[in-house]
Amino acid sequence: MGSCKLLTPMSYVCQQSEPLLSSHLHENCVVRLLQPRVSVPPICDRIIELSTSVWTQLANNELIYFVSKSEGITILCKDRPPIDIAVQGVGKLGIHASCKGSGKFALFQTHSILDMDTAG
Image 1 (cartoon, rainbow, N blue to C red):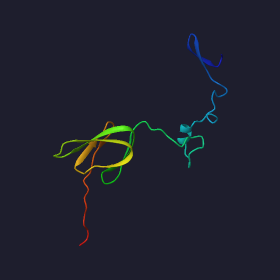
Image 2: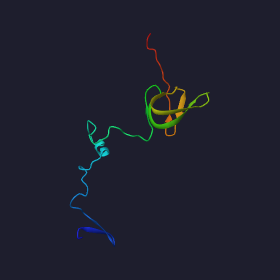
Image 3: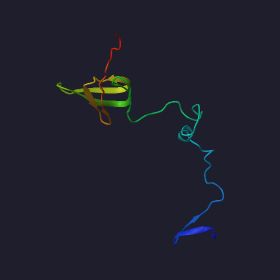
Image 4: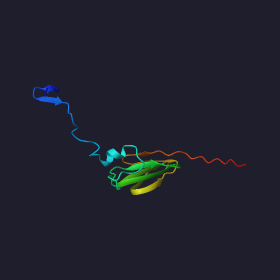
C-alpha cells in the first residue's frame, strides 16, 4: 500500500501495474466506428436502430427524413390555415417557399428560390 493514496480513512487509490481491461481485446462496434477506417468492421452489425428522427435539408426547400415512429408535422403558410401531416419511415418532404414547417424536434425554414433568365 506504499504506492497508494489515501482518499478517506477506509478508501485508497492505487496505481495498477497491469490494465484491468484491454481496450483492444474488448473493443465494441461504437469504438471502432469512431476510429478512422475505410469500411465497416466485421464485428459491427449492418443494421442500426435509430430511436430519434433524422432530418436533412436539401436544395429547393426539400428535406429527406428518417422517422422511426409516426411524427406530426405542421405546415404554416401565409393566408392559409395550418396543415397537419404525419410522416413515418423514410421519405422526402417539399415545403413551398412561402411556408414554414414544425415538428416535435425540428423547425423547417424555407428560402425564396430565384430563377434568373440570363438569355437574351
